[in-house]
Amino acid sequence: QTKKQCDQKLLIRMKTECVPCSLNFKTQCPAGYIKITNGTGIPDCRYYLEIKAHVLSFPGCRHHCMKEFEQPECCQGYWGPDCMGK
Image 1 (cartoon, one colour):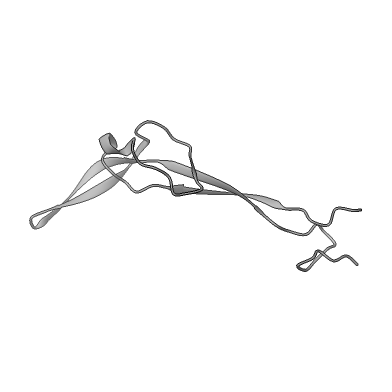
Image 2 (cartoon, helix red, strand yellow; image 1 turned 135 degrees about the vertical axis):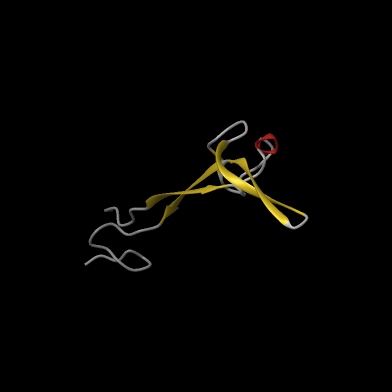
């Protein structure tokens, strides 16, 4: 039995929304994602507040999240939904 299916591992990264750093330690990643930053996250963004007619921007924090999933793929020389060979 030769191996016909060679799944590819894919890493998907995303960042949570920018919020005040003091609130960010409660922020969760979306379902299925693993939080790869901890505490208050990374202070690399700005969030906006509308006060009366003004929009003010403040430094904020966000978390980085990661999800790993396997994409089914056929090995070289095989193709199709059932990974048929020559």
